[in-house]
Image 1 (tube, rainbow, N blue to C red):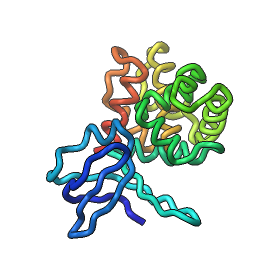
Image 2: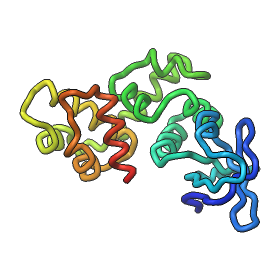
Image 3: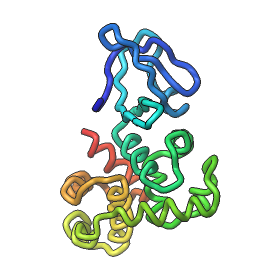
Image 4: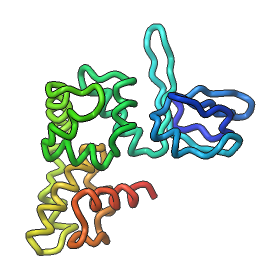
Length: 200
């Protein structure tokens, strides 16, 4: 319903902000990290939004980037993860680190997040890895976007899988990774640069 809100930042407090858009104040729940990155009171801000509708409640959640929004939606799709848990997770890990942890089966990293135990961490990894579109084979993409060096190929395959976890398509990923220096970057740096290119 709302893709984003752009207006004056009226209130900035723990757990939520209020944005004035043409005289209407919208209360938007956000992660502590996202709130810290926003401007000061009175400044014009833009926040990507997710409207969560339940029988007894309608709540608006806000994010600084589309990647954070995508990660929030992914977390909500995991059984047992609610909006509050998803926001807490977003406060403690970036989308690139989270996606990398999912595709490398890093249970320890995910279970170190507040409110996530070993079983929840395993469920997050299992359910989100299944969301990677099997038809969009990472092998096919890698042949187009990576040089011949085998060392690079493995890094790019993992970066591609991570970006697929975050919901990007083969075509989008292929274009975003084209001119990145894959040889001298870590997997997470490749993912971050890919996300920056995708955000343009």
